[in-house]
Structures are given as structure tokens and as C-alpha cells.
Image (tube, rainbow, N blue to C red; front, side):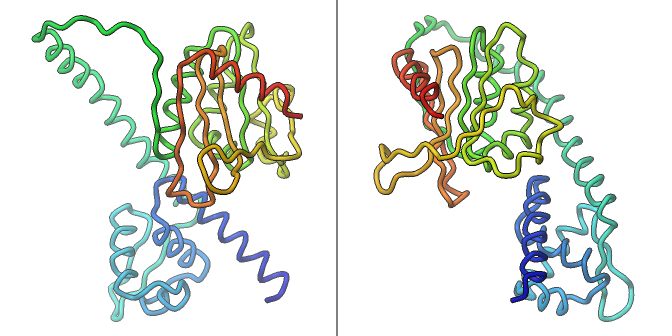
Length: 271
């Protein structure tokens, strides 16, 4: 494989990853990139270009058509073509915005229903106590981190890999960190940050420290793996072991001061 071809494949992979961040499945993103790269194609050409079985290609093309980013001709056999890349991203962003708007509209209704359910019951309020949770999936982790950061009063300490920094940026966690009040101390440490210019317009670099090596631990069993962490006010902490398999993304949350303070000390010691 030539260097140019290798570089091209890497760029395709990065574009596929960006499209997946807009809620496209892996095969949807691969087929969309193929159509944008090769122009109008029949299904068998799409299958050959992507290595995806033809039956799966037809199903995926139908899904992309339902999103309004792929169209077909009336000729036989049908040829499929994609919108221009800018129009594709505009359409996907609009779909996501519509879904979020609908979800936001349902929030008030669901909240009212819940309050009615609770009002119909008489039960004592549970006392405050230490809380431990296992959170599965990067989106769920992002929601939890956003809530933690929103409640910060004094300090937020973050240790993440470049991969998770990008994930936090996609989920607007970085924006939330950047909007913290001035009296809240923020320290972001990025393990092995190579692509420093990737977010330079979005992150206040004064709050970012580059860490040469990953902080790894084997407390979950097996081989040591890098640990990402977010610590708020030394009273809440979420630890995210970084697995190469994205399907296994999970985090350990604890609202215990002793544990959060211990990880805060570790965070401070990492250079």
C-alpha cells in the first residue's frame, strides 16, 4: 500500500467517525462516504467499493434515503447518489436538532406526570448518602459529567485521553467546562495530546496541561488500561477506564469525599 493510499484511508476513517458522531451507523457512514467519493453508483458497485454485502447495502441505502441525504434515479438498475458534503452535514444536524427539540418539548409533560405520580404516594424522603453507580455508554457518561460540572462550586479536575477529549467536545462537555464561573478552579490534563491544534479555537489552553504518559491502572482486573477521570469539588468523581472496544465504554461514579479526594491527589501528582 502506498503512503498516499494509506493517508487517504486514514482520512476516510476520520470522516466516517465524524459522521457517526451525527448518529449514523457504521455502514451508513461508510456507504455515504463511498457515494460522495465515487458519485452515482448502482448497489453492486456500492457493495464492491465498501465490502458490505449487497443485501445490507440495500437496507442501508433505504435508511439513508429516509434521512433525505441519499437519492436514487428512475433508471434500471437504479443508481444512488448523495448530497454534497456540506448539505449532508446540514441535513444530519437538522435531524438531530429536531429530535432534541421534540425531546425538550416532552420534558415538561413527563415532569408533570412524574410529579402527579409522586403526589399520589406518601413516602418518606430518603436521607442523603454516598452513592455509587456504574454508567454504561459514552453518551450516558457525558450526561453524568454535565450534571456534575453544573453543580461545581469550587473546583473541577479533568484527566482525559485525546480520544475522550474529542468525545467530550462532541457532547458539549468542553463548552460546559469553559463556561464555569471564574471562581471555580478548572484543570484539564490531556494524556498524550498530539493533535493540539484540533480544538485550539474551542478550549482555553491556559486550563489545559499536556501529560506525556497515560495514567494506567489494573484495579478492574486484567491488563492495565488508561483511566480518565472527572473530579468535582473533591466530593464527586467519575472514573472511565479506556478500552479499545467502544462497545465497552463505561464509568464508575462515586459521591464519596474520601474516594474523590484520593483521585484529586492523584490528578495533582500527574505531570
